[in-house]
Amino acid sequence: MKHKNYHLYQAYLKTPEWKAIRLLVINERKGKCERCGSTEKLEVHHKTYKNLFNEPLEDLELLCKVCHTKHHNKTNNKRKNKKKRYKKRFASTVWKNAYAR
Picture (cartoon, rainbow, N blue to C red):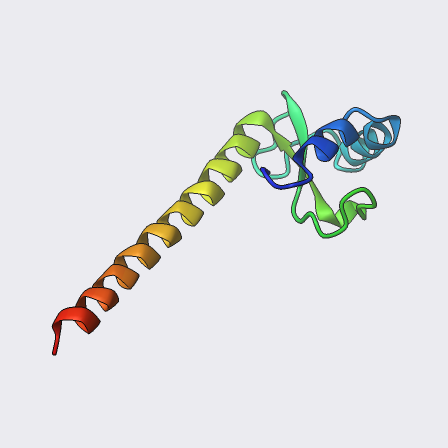
C-alpha cells in the first residue's frame, strides 16, 4: 500500500487501537492463517482500505507472512501486467492512427 496516507497508515499500525483489533482478529480466527492454516508469523491483511481506521472485522483477513507476501506479489503483478497491456494497446492504436492513412 503506497498512497498518500502511507505514513499515517504506518503510524496507525502502532496504536493501541490497531493492536487490540489485531488481537481480536487473531482470536476470532483461532490463530490460523485463513489460506494455509499456518500458525507462524501471523499478520492481519486489509481486504479493502475503504473503512481504514474504522475497519469492521469482515474487512480483515488473518494471513501468515508467506501467504500475505504471495497475495501482495500477485496483486502487484496483475497491476503491472494491466499497465503493460494498456501501453501496448495504446501504442499500437497511436501507430495505426498515425500511419494507416
